[in-house]
Length: 257
Image (cartoon, rainbow, N blue to C red; front, side):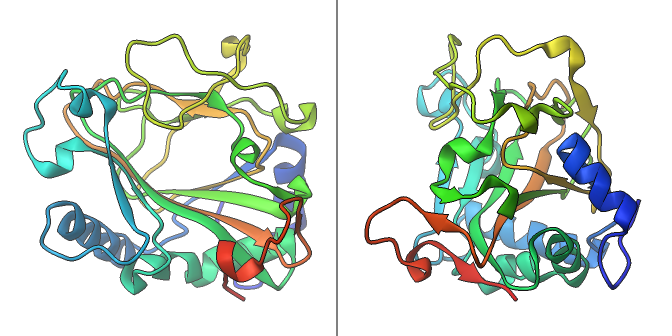
């Protein structure tokens, strides 16, 4: 399913709220993806300077010396905080993406977080099943939407996302640290997840997953010899509030529309 210029259809909105997620095919143009991919490569290879607050997170297996990366880009798990890099943060203003998110949250929206997820071959790279609301202080959950756009093909072999349809209706579940040999920093998971009911979300470049912040989701190991890479932003509606004392919108978010 695609998205019209005026935003999501009534059927698409219903699917999102019933299932907790919605896939939009071909949402982001190939030319935009190529530009984001080039910028990502320039930053992680050291050919461009990181913007303020931007951080490169190496995979835990590289940090612990369990694997030797073939190149700088093979060492990277995540590029965080794209807000101060105009070339990458342009993703958050992609017209079709903004129209889709506004259909769910209203006209005035802000970004909460932005990342490029890089899953290189040769590392464990799993992300346990979790809910993104665990990382946010803003509420209500219904006024937050995550987006995840495949920059390269995402399939079961290279560790695509998997989701538990309808799990967003369970509320925020208890998270803990997985009992794995290698777990990347900040990767928490939910115990007792019914993995048999997972849906593996395979995406072509430009396809986009919209998902509720309470949707249980995760990803597996990259068993291929190619990269799995995606660019992701979380949006919040203007009327979200935080329970953090002294919170200021300017310090946590960036207005998009």
